[in-house]
Structure formats: C-alpha cells, structure tokens
Image 1: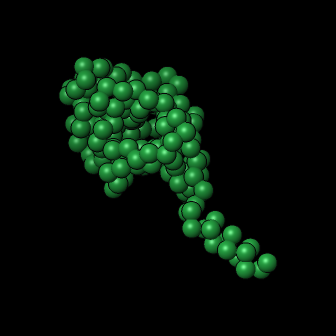
Image 2 (image 1 turned 45 degrees about the horizontal axis):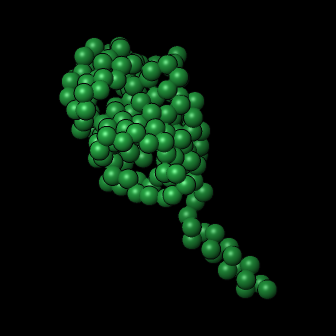
Length: 163
C-alpha cells in the first residue's frame, strides 16, 4: 500500500507543474481564426502568478502547446498573425490602462490586409525610446490594447505601422 501511494506521487510530479489555461482567439497564417487555450506555466514572481502569453510566444520554443476544441496540439509560433485575449484574463501580466509604458495610438497593417488599431504598450520608459526602437526591439510580438482586449501582433507578419 505504501508503494502505490509513492507511485502516485511520482506520477503527479512526472506530469510537470500545474498549468493555467488562458482563453485566446488565434488568427493564423492559413486564414483560420480559432478559439483556443494557451497553457501557462506557474511563475509566482509575476502578476497573476503565471507566465504571460507574450512570454510564451516570445520564448525560445518554435511550437507551443494549446488546447483547440478539447484536443491538445502543438502550434507553430510562426503561423500566428495575432492573438486576442481579455485584458483582465490570466497571462496578461497585469496590464493596466493607467500604468506607465503606453505609447500613442497605432494602426498596424498585416500581410493578410487586416489592420489592427489600438494603444501600443511597452515596459520601456517613454522618454528613452523612439517608435522605431520599440518595433525593432527583440521579440516576435508587439502588444496593442484595444478597449477590454489585448492583441499580440506578430512582427513577422507586420507590413506597416502608422502612428
């Protein structure tokens, strides 16, 4: 009996840490728009206690695990044009409309012909960066706030930015 409870503990740890599911709408390069959940790892040092969605897609992995219609799948980060999510959902990093680090309104034209408009957000001090510095900083995605949603926009699929 003692062996089976020890085995159960080992099984629980072998699956890795508990993950939080973040509901998102993915706009993909093949033209599909799908409702999904991105899995977020725990991170007690961040607001909300989980890694941000931006941290997941800007990370070193080319493929990320997502849940689509109840099925686990791997999704290529390069196949994502944009990701929409609620501003107060898990994985947003505690984005606050009144917090510092917001820039002017931007209009982002994607290679699909779609235009995404909103307030470009960044953690860098405004007085220390030109707009071109923001667009050229490392990372695959830019974050735009549009009312009650955040949109992560792939820089690889961004054709033009106006502000």
